[in-house]
Length: 240
Image 1 (cartoon, one colour):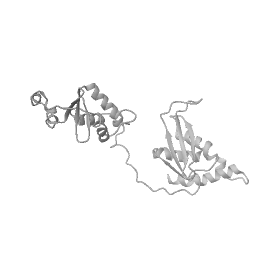
Image 2 (tube, rainbow, N blue to C red; image 1 turned 45 degrees about the horizontal axis):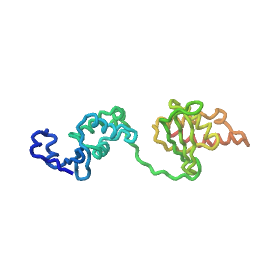
Image 3 (spheres, one colour; image 1 turned 30 degrees about the vertical axis):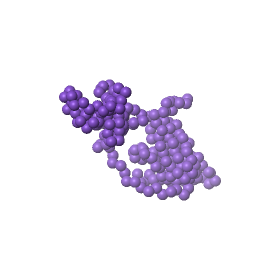
Image 4 (cartoon, rainbow, N blue to C red; image 1 turned 90 degrees about the vertical axis):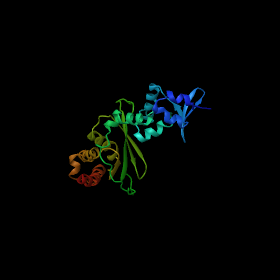
């Protein structure tokens, strides 16, 4: 490895390169100029096309997931070096369209973490999570999946939906496919917006037939199950 430190060369360098040059940061190996620090040794870039490629790879691709500025800087410094690379990475992240749409200053504050009481019976607490960005499949071209997992038995239930389905459509599907065969949930843990969860609880109650809210027929299993569902749903609705 050859140290690239020639006194006569310093007169032809821009000020932005001189500091790293005088510190002996540059090394030439097999025709490639490397920039060395205490923990890294990466290629030096001058071509703007390659720099834009590095910025894209460190921030925009799927595995990067539009990282925040500090995390994008950590990834970029292990790939390559160019003058003002820190400012370029920070500016690239701040001008990202997706990051601007997800403005943290205008978004809701995170809620306080609450300890979850472990359930003592099935379907007392369920976890709901949407699996999105899926290719259309099936006869009706479903493109989203709602995964419901019982915390007590760890039993998963998958329901297929369309991306534009409303909370009412979701409630009807949950009622027909889950609650009508088992019992109602007492608590739902989900990362969806609270407006959706509120609408879901209300629509679950509205999904009950009117006759089921008024009386119970003796020795009728379906009516008794619906009555139990009302007893579970009504306290939850009153708290909304």
